[in-house]
Length: 322
Length: 312
Figure 1: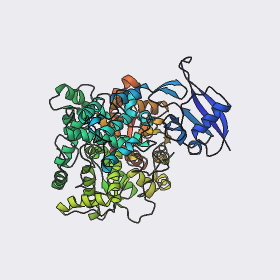
Figure 2 (figure 1 turned 180 degrees about the vertical axis):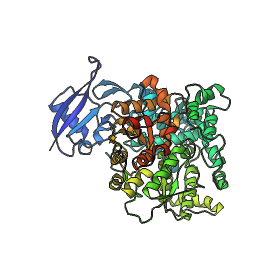
Figure 3 (figure 1 turned 120 degrees about the horizontal axis):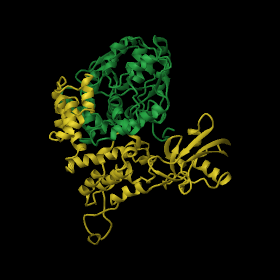
Figure 4 (figure 1 turned 90 degrees about the vertical axis):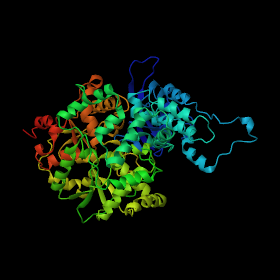
């Protein structure tokens, strides 16, 4: 048996204005999970400690919370892996959500973003046209299997730094779920779905891979890239900064072998977007001028790397759309 | 808390090496708007008595963005770079950018682990007479410092210890995540930068922002996103007592150094000077401050060095 000090976030929106912390000591088997330690604390010490849980085996997605500052499923986290040197484990509600009571948060923004996707199959043909279920080849299904493992625990959403500064961003789970229908051969609304998720700021993903910590290995980070590629190959909402940026990066590498920084800024913001360009580059407080004064401005024309023809051969062989 | 069912990277170097020649991939930004990073890396290499042989014909690594356009292009571009390194007899490629590290390692992992990918890449490389045999390892200069030089040796080499300067580490995403691509250390609780800070006489500041994103890759997509991400992280660093920041990534550097001023309106003034990793290490090893391009930074790091009586 091991003694664990649970350092708990305590807050009840019905009565408290600010949260406080409680230190609760429990004695549990050494191999116990954080969820079991919380259950023990609730049963033996303080029945008012609140947290969501159900299946206890990483299937229901209820018990995601911050454990020593890192979001994850309490039922999948072993105490001995996270316990600090002083024998404590800090438990907090998921970030990027409004706390309701202790570790229970208001999940509404997360569900709202799912709902916007119309997360159900919208088939190309009527059910009555089919005598039996619609058949999908194993290869077509393989693409969807990982995403279908999503248990909507919101771990990725809580970890997402873009959500933390811009709640309008759909977040990793919703984009991964959009992918699940975009790549479903039975679905009829592929381009509408791509347009919808683009409007919900698909291209704001910062490529930080925080969502690679997904407890179910859905890999939302790679599904986001898949959806972006689908947007580019289907040419949906291409006049946004995101796709423009991706294409200008590819074009720059093809032409010079390098990222031509000046060209990237102009190409992304829009060559004819004079106000936008002034804002990014030259206006009084803006970065471009400050960088220029320090001699940090990138070169206006990039000299191609030696043997740049080889790079162009690669782009042409792969038929990269630039 | 490592994900228990994911293998850590198998390319991790543990064996000692006799040669001190390395292939060197500086990346785009160190050749463009962060030239001070390139220069201070070369000065540091001189102090460490290692030879960095620049792969001058190498292309951009793909910068995490070309994947959005095509799933194969980054892999083949990097295979071309590795073929060049192999042709020069250099099986060790050193990077000085977190994004280069992550994306070059990801490409290399795909090439080495999948015969199909390797054959496909070589079928294109063959058009210009190149071939990659899978013998290259990509590592960041930070890892070289710890694995090949060693913290004890580094400590011995310090001639200008940082006098307890409180330095906040800022890793940059792609040197630690995804863990199955990098895996050199825990992505959730890395400590290589802390170890280096302490070896050169500084005090490492612990704060939750150290493994978070600087927002660089979306700086142009929507106004304010990267600025707020920088503000949020630098606020945390400042509140935990940081006097300066160190980063192994020039993209993070551009964001942290560039956006703190604009972030002040929402996050309060932080004004934390940001050092490139090789700048601060080279400084502690005795390279004169005026050679390190510190005057190129928007938030002048010389102020804090003067305050700590490290320069006059």
